[in-house]
Amino acid sequence: MGNRKLVSRDICPYFILLAEDHVVVRLWIRKMIEGNPNWQVVGEVSDGVELLKHLKECENSPHLVILDISMPRMGGLEVLPQLKAVYPDIKVLILTMHKSKEYFERAMAAGADGYLLKQHADTDLPTAISTVLQGGTYISPL
Image (cartoon, rainbow, N blue to C red; front, side, top):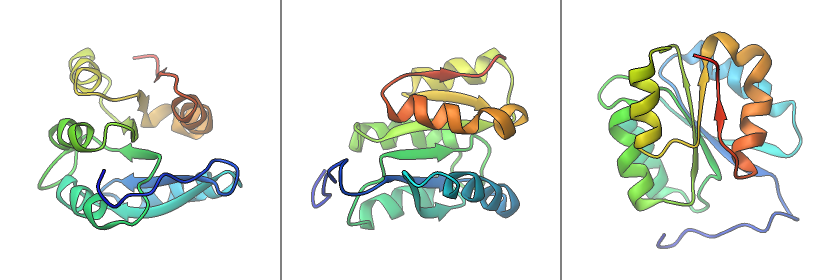
């Protein structure tokens, strides 16, 4: 991972990066995350191109990327295999409106650690984040 530093769990919160093209959704996710003192948003991007650039330039890699599927320039399903190839230790939680089995299977095959539907995010986002950060897999009912 080049110059990236692994941060000890006992001295700081989990770092989370948001990759979502809708500003209102990003603000809402940030508000949910900031309600937990063990989580910290360390960046926000609006597409996969920005995501890869941000990861390359950041000093400390995030522990988790919350990734939308439908974004301009490079969507979540396009960037996910690249992200996992270069940063295999970063967990990825897909946060999407896509309920189809096809999208779910593609995301999981590409390396997603969780799949959360936006329609369930208001109640399930904290559980999904915790599950994925602890090494589990979170899957919304499709």
